[in-house]
Image (tube, rainbow, N blue to C red; front, side, top):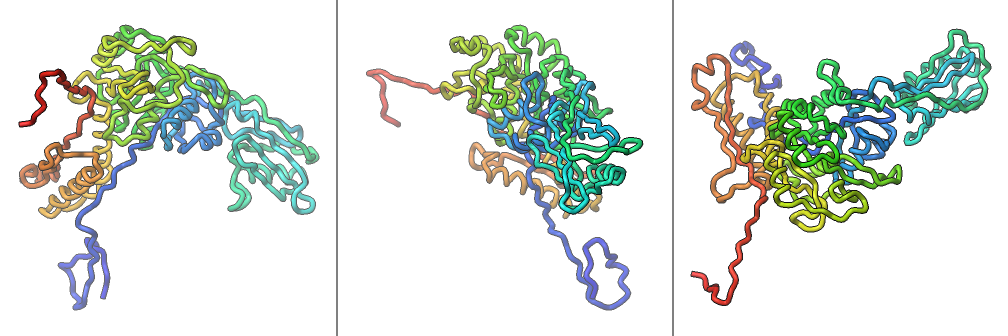
Length: 507
């Protein structure tokens, strides 16, 4: 009485009389929407892996992995800190350098050298202490770095050659399951170990950040898997290259975003004029809905670590808001916290200088957005337009690319299970049912809404009408879906008729 999985047993070639139980999988595959809140950040740091994505959930994570935010241009930590204030809580951060970064180290005569696991000036805070071990005639090594738990390697041999070899192995591979390898340092024994092992503390020095990066360092390349291209495959839904205002990179950033289903947040040169911003965008050839381009009116922000008010890019504010906003919604008129002032206000001492309607119209028609105060909701800092970088009025809302990416990435990740199946009428129905179930779920969550209460805001076709015999003979399977994305209230016209002769009786 065998029990088999459906599809693994040829039921047309049974010779022995018996009962054969085939376990059938559910006929309808259910799709769960992909994450739409992950924010990608590319920038510099004073510690941590280079050109490798790191999962960051908060500033404690960032401090541990990348050493904390730094008061300088292109700092990834600053962007993360600003975005966290807007509610974002899931990041993929990539550290880049200019190639001059160096790891901190210290040489112990006759014993060997300790070298920081990563490059960066934060490694200069590493301290390695040697003391008596828990057992007789052993040594204990403790590695400390601000923001990290102390790493304790106990009961190492006390004799020099054996100590050096054991320490190298312990730091590189760990001692046991409770004491894994060091996340901070490595040790290289001297060619000839002759020193007596003394109880002492060693300070690592010489670590440098390599933080003087340019556009090439930040953008990187797919071939070298560096810079922005490292974020490919990390499932980020919104991404930014910190403080990169080089207009010659706009099209490349947008193309990367389009290829990866990611909405890019870009920025103009700090202090630029409106006409200059429009000209730079046009010269760059940017007219695409896969990115937001913020006007170069940079923001003053209170740095909680360095205790100063700094001029920072507005990218982090908007990217952070998108990381805390459903993809069907717009950041238009949503409050942005932490902004003290902007360059437009005349700095920290200037009076508020609202943008005129004419100025805003020039920016929005060109596909450039801006953070302002006041906003339609009142005296708050907020995104003023809710536009992407496209000049096509039918797709230039910031909710459009984010919602389209969300649906497309969900289908891309979920429908692959149908590849390799035999094409049958049942398969066509299953493919359609899977998509209908997902889209109906969006209706249930209020992310898609029928405007007349009758017609569905979507249509899915997967039957013989779009799968004729000549296509099936070539092993093609086609499904066609149409989804109507709800618009955003941007131009609210409230009509008022008032006067002594106004008639208010309804028909």
